[in-house]
Length: 204
Image (cartoon, rainbow, N blue to C red; front, side):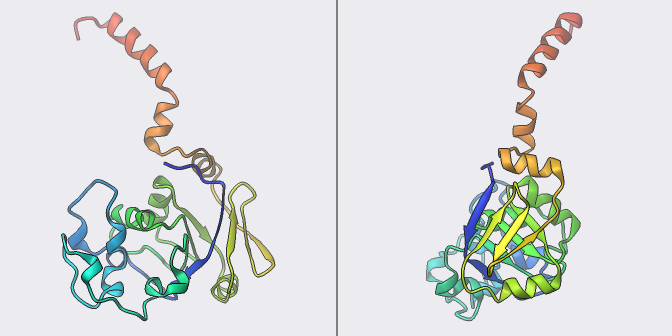
């Protein structure tokens, strides 16, 4: 997992509440467990005008010109703005996989579904909670938005807004530690334990 400290990017404004995980990555794309390759089908039913299926050449599909991710001014956005209860619905981890694979590193919303919120941190995405008044200001932003995780701040429109984040989750993101990386920090201790264990229980 890549380390995250700061980010400056344009933000894609997805002005919808209660965006569920089936909208983020529809169920027909959940067959793979590789974590990668889901970006082209992020928000599939909203991005394209036809029905998406696994294996389709997305470059040949008709796109919905009115959907935010298809607008030229939001190409390359690494920050996603949303409304209340983002990531609700089923607990599929494919949803943050798809968002991360597309290129999003930060999602800002007034609230998130709990399981989705937790899964974001595990997959290198920073979910930030801001109240509705601040969200309205962020949706009106014309330029870039800057995120500073170490100082827990969102900078936009000449204003600085702070946000809360669990200290351990913050440490993991700053150091690029997913669950496997966290375990590998103790690799020497694990090896020492295994050696002593098998010396004591040599018949195993």
